[in-house]
Length: 583
Image (cartoon, rainbow, N blue to C red):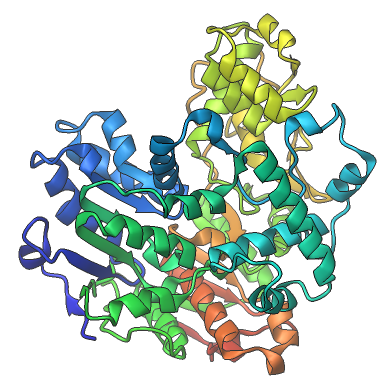
């Protein structure tokens, strides 16, 4: 298979190949290129918007597509039509199901939750065992039910649908070896029975059932971040492609990082090597400078399951350095004072607490994301605005109230949340604060200072630059110190969010992000302990994840090697503690 450089004159819609795969390493502008060469020409040339679909496996990628497209097609496409064009694969599947089933037959419960039971089967308060399951967490941060739910979700994404079969047993031994197989199968059976008896479906059911419905006739189908699609999602992509005139896959095998959701590099590789697709590659990075590029290329070059092709670094200067935590904290503080953005990345979410403590001690403001959505998440903004309006005595819409209930922000809920959400959707517009009492909702002061999600606290407090001394992490809870005054009323500048330039997140959470300064903590205890027993596939998966993390850096990359739990050398990083690279 030969991956030729992408040629806009040859490969653009509508004259380009009808089956096109565009591969792009980090920073090469894959999404913008596809918008410019494929989606914009289609949407501005008279093709009906409903026959152009750009989809991804995640909401964040779909939102990014819409954000890039809107300024380019504004005179030609209505915002509602554009919203329908950019979607997730699950939304596409649900759209197909709604054409053949009535709303009453489509009760979507969301992700896989083995403890789920319909509202009618519950009492007002959770049972004592339910409360215990929710409150007691194991050392991996998940309770037993959540781990079994994740296993069943992964199995179905891998298209393993029989929990009694040998394939499922093998997967269970690999993922949750400490849990009895009989208990897992019993929990799955109860969950599936509950769904069947009440006509409910979850996200995996949604994809699976969409395969039995006729697809739409499409002129152009674009799949972004294709490398992170699971086998079940690939089955839906193949199903949709059967009636699409032009199909474009966009991704990078080396950035396949969501293996816990069933993503496998070989799914994309198998299609690229089939001879059906014209494979093109973007080669020039506009983000990754030469020193970072050198480290990243050496790292990912150790993997076998990949496509080796030219990849050129950005032209601007860069620096890679191995540093100790005190030096890193000082560098972060200087960058923050200069107004530069910083990403601090760790392999595990729990290791972010350590960095939050170090930065707090240095009085450096930071946002501890814990894998949550970035500060600009539109749904969270909507919830906060609606909750503020209710508190100030204004009326809101049914949709706003449903958004508040889904997020459980700024409210104490009395009763079952799913029932309340359904009541909110059926209530009469507009909804006032007094009307909420009839729905079982009591509006209270928003976002107590012990919230674990700093995003919410920042949004509902009016924080001025001179009033925020530092952000402090205590006992796993993020607080503001000193506490700023609560909002006495909705301020005129409520839309303006405070500028937090230092963000803490995981390697997984860094996907799609970039910053002038990136700090990568190489602490990987599990991999370091099991070094002798780790399979080649597991090592390659960790390399891809670390590859994504280090290539977030636009200028400087600081690597923190913890010593005892350092797995960098095992993965192929050969830097010494005193070595630095610059250009």
